[in-house]
Length: 303
Image 1 (tube, rainbow, N blue to C red):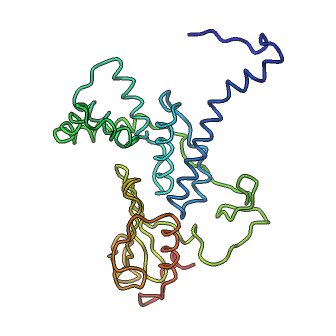
Image 2 (image 1 turned 30 degrees about the vertical axis):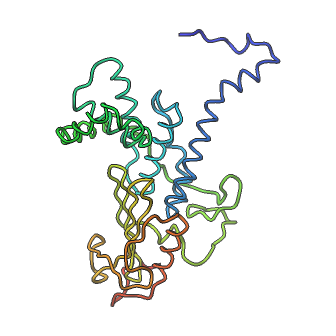
């Protein structure tokens, strides 16, 4: 291990350059994290305020995460969990990939370990996985997934649990009504100069009543006081976001007892490959539809 040179031994005129060079990787990682936050806000505009305040959980926990691609994948997974309302403490696919990479340098992997390694690569770095797909290793992975999927599921769950970062969760969020020094219409703002934009808010009531994320597939269900809602699915970056208008039989129906409807002027089918702007527009339009169900709206949906 190279010895550390005390800053005091560096000529005064060179100290700033040495300090700047030593901090460069830190600033670079901050830029990656901030970029991923902005991208997540575009993917999930309804959760933009919470995502903006999620920077604190985007810490690199392993050596591999010092590199841009795995670190960005780590951030994406955590931010997608935030948007879906899921636990951010268990290990991410990028963290599993880092552990598996370290182990592979020490001991040969069995079929279950290799399958878990390749699954983490596919989940965290799909572009890299696709680039090496024609190789024998990926062919082996497909075979291992077919033969040992249950064991891989079990090992993946165990490793995620063992990699749990217990303090990696959002604390109570407070906001002064400014983001990067600029006034912001943030749902967490408490400053007296916070401005009410009026009209539908993309933070409240635009919060999912159901949320799940499995193997990169994120699913949200929204329910509005007018009896309509939306089922939104994002499977991969390539497939984009899909939306279907949904409704319930009555105001007493459970949140998960919904069905897709083609009886609205919004759409008569699933709308695919939506941009963030198109998705936001559709949510606002569904929220503004005339009331469809008899009886008073549930109190928790009124607003």
